[in-house]
Length: 78
Image (cartoon, rainbow, N blue to C red; front, side, top):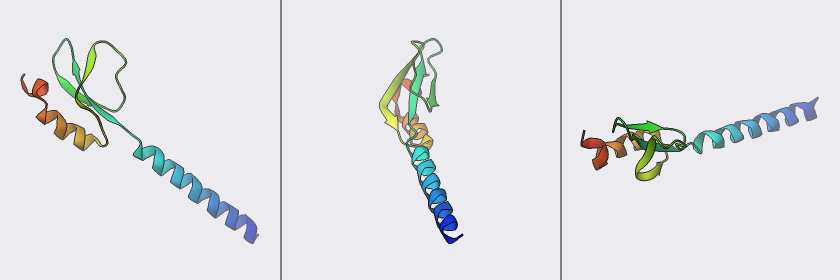
């Protein structure tokens, strides 16, 4: 019984650690729509030709990307 509890606790800890790492690896991009000329923050690298990545590229958090978007000249012109 003790072995079962120890194995369960270790498994739960490993699963929690793996989930925490997956959440940290999220990337955010500031993209500009080529037709509307508006910038937005997205959490996946764009794969279409209708949007382009602007600014310094990859941001670690959404807040950083939103702050970065305010400083990008292409995003503040319109």
